Amino acid sequence: MNFEMLFVFILLFVVVSLFVSDKVRLDVVAVGAILALLLSGLLTPTEALSGFGDPVLLLIAGLFIVGEGLFKTGIAFAVGDWLMRVAGTNELKLTVMLMLVVAGLSAFMSSTGAVAIFIPIVLSLAAKADIAPSQLLMPISIAALLGGMLTLIGTPPNLIVSTQLEREGLEPFSFFSFAPIGLVILIVGIVYVVIAKKYLLPNKSTKGKTNRKKQTLKDMVIAYNLQGEMLRLKLDDSSGIVNQTIEEARLLSRYNTMIIGIERNNLLIPALSSTKLKSGDSLLVAGKEVALSSLVTNEKLEKLSIGDYQVKRIKKELGLAEVMMTPKSTLIGNSLIDLNF
Image (cartoon, rainbow, N blue to C red; front, top):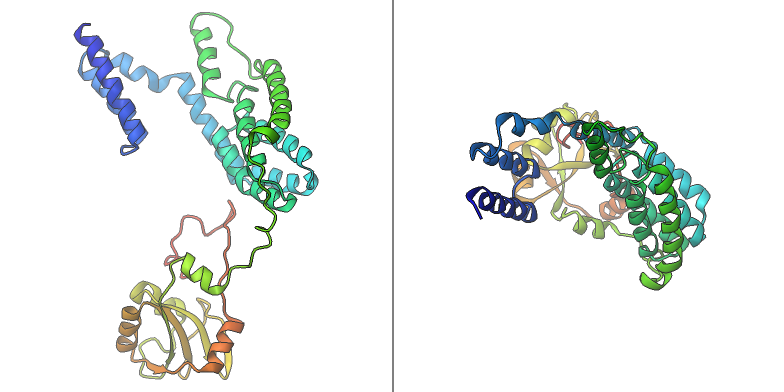
């Protein structure tokens, strides 16, 4: 074994080890390997840079753009919503329709992205139909892989072999050259999955789980690590935040505390960013003990007791909610402080 072969084997071992460890970004490892081959003299500068202009690389990059477009525009989610309406609770119908839809999506976008989009949809369908999630999750994973065989851009190997044909002076594959074979494999795969999944996959019913007790306010506080303290604070003319809106007061950024309600004229009003704080208001403020102490001292606020009446009122009129942001949400990319949330 000469030096060049030994060097390549060692480099390959290092690259694979770094990939497995996941301690260094994959793109950094890949570029580092190219630089190592270039500096060792095994590759010329032209050879080292040739891959960046390779049509396969550009097509794969374009594939990610198409996939992101399907995600951002909500097309994929619209397909999922339609499926939830028409599929009903029939397990056979659900399995076949899910596999067809996921395979169709993965023919034009990343199979990983297609599966990721459908995971929450599948879990919801499984709960609704009282089906074990594994009976639907495994089929969509297989369908995503089979869907990559339908088009030229469905999976990188298709692009690689087509590009190699073109380099050899032969006619490359067209966009749907793989479809005739891919469709046969997809149909056979769906039939096999429908028959075999009942025997090979766990079929523990979700019955009972869907009827579990709803999360209480306490459950959500613990789940999101919101444990702290709530104080009822009186606001007067001497306070530094009087006559300011909640947005202008910036209690979240300055003290890491949050106004969750305002008592004014015996009414509990919502704490909106545009709500103006007035002298005589009683503020319901949540936060850690140290942060609340700093707020009271610096802003000259008076602590008020929280009696049974206030406790009952808070439980009745205030609460927490779990929400999911849609791809078109204007909140994406902003911090809670930026949004004055």
